[in-house]
Amino acid sequence: MWQIAVLGALEVRRLGRLVPVPDGKASELLVRLAVEPGVQVSTDRLVDDLWFGALGVRPNTVQSKVYMLRRALGDPDLITSRNGGYTLAV
Image (tube, rainbow, N blue to C red; front, top):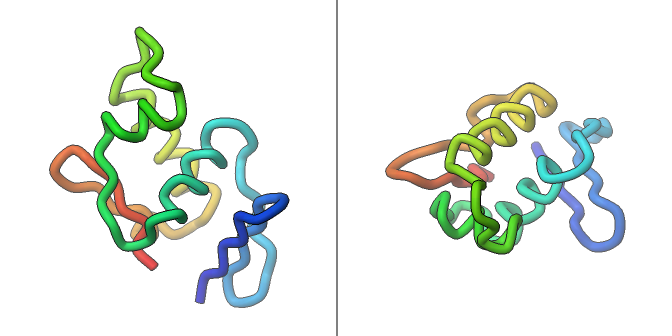
């Protein structure tokens, strides 16, 4: 069972054990997905929300942050991708 606390400092636990999450945009991405668990968020929306629509930020930038999160969390199925978006599968 996963627990993701987003009020205050980000804290992620799996089966009661603390899971370290990379700082910066990777953790911001996790928080953004946790705000709407189980809902697909488009890559464009993630770029707007995390980089405020900055020019030069491409979908592969989001993809690299998702990759970092999947590795850190040790569960690649926790963040799913489909049709140009990502879902926190909890």
